[in-house]
Figure (cartoon, rainbow, N blue to C red):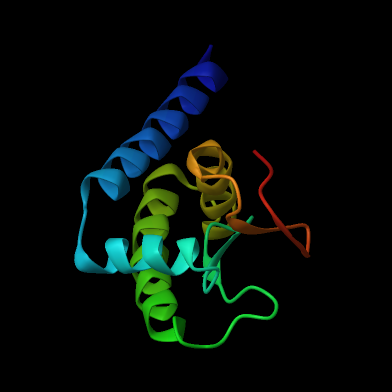
Amino acid sequence: MKRLQTIFVRLSAIMLLVVAMTASASALDLDAAAARAKGLAGEVDNGFLAVPPGASNEAAPVIAAINNQRRAEYAKIAAQNNLELQVVGTMMFQKIYPRFPAGTWVQIQGTWKQKAP
């Protein structure tokens, strides 16, 4: 029972993070969406953004700023739930992956591909 409560608390924290990240429609978020749509930024299975293969570094400043925001949020969640930052990032990627439109560049286990429809 104690293990179930711990898992529930962790999943609740992740869901709160998803809501918070979705609700914060800052200029950087809009730039990230535009960069992803143009193929200049892709999502990595560790919960961070990166420049996909063949893309210019045009979106690098946006990617760096968003990754800094994500890292800070992941660190908060990790500390509150006694998790590693990498675990939180991976869980976040798994939660938001279904929301990515077809054609979004994603890197899964080191391999870049575009998300299928």
